[in-house]
Image (cartoon, rainbow, N blue to C red):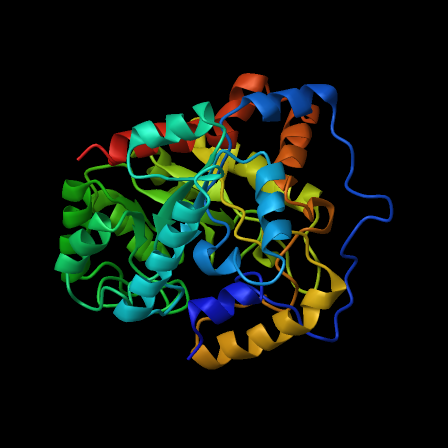
Length: 374
């Protein structure tokens, strides 16, 4: 079974088939953004709600300083790091959390662990990168509700109920829509609400998402997803679910995964913006953000073989989704400063600076401030 450390080493959560030879970089470097976009990005609170999984393992070892420089230069204020992977055990997850804590302790000039709403503001004021600990799965919880509080005490502030497949709490997006939130899942949602842990409904099926939204007394989030009206895929959300999420005060983060387009097309910036603009139309400007869910640093040709092997491991573990036949990135966003390019694209499409600031991170900052106040 694949571990999160192995997962992190291959740079992401989706992989490429060795037969594909996509364009990975620009001949003359990333495209230049406008002066207005650059200044807006520099001055804004920027939150990527899914990146750098297993941060304590990813940012150590070979080329550590190069990796850390990419984080410093990214312009991101806060990021959400998945710990424990798609199927980590209790012990594996504890080790992942310990590694993340160790990294933050050893690099206090760069990182700040986010435990409270005030930490979001401190990260921006101190020009550090805030790190939100999160779960994308429920395997580390098994069927033990009390572990939600145990992990919260270790700093985990966002938790999912399932990763693609059925768990004791809910049904994943690859297991159909006949069933959804279980009774134990309802108990878990209530416990998360009480403790001030954000309920993340990413990777769940439509019924689970709808029932999770209805059950939660605090705004839930979908940290990383796309729009089914733009591209039909089980990881993407239906319009009715997106509307319900917004009505409950939640946020939807748009990811940069291959699930934005039908196979074998590699998504482009324009494809990404189609999902972003549709989400803004359906959810409204106060309920959309960004959760890239792709490798933080730029993918190169040297990474492709490792990504191909990762596909085989994910398929064997039963956690891969349809469409994982392309690398997890967007060619014209293949840079640590990918979100800055999104800023430029939003401005060029006529969105105001105020709306762009919300999408960049103000929306997630607002909702986390509400959720984490237990």
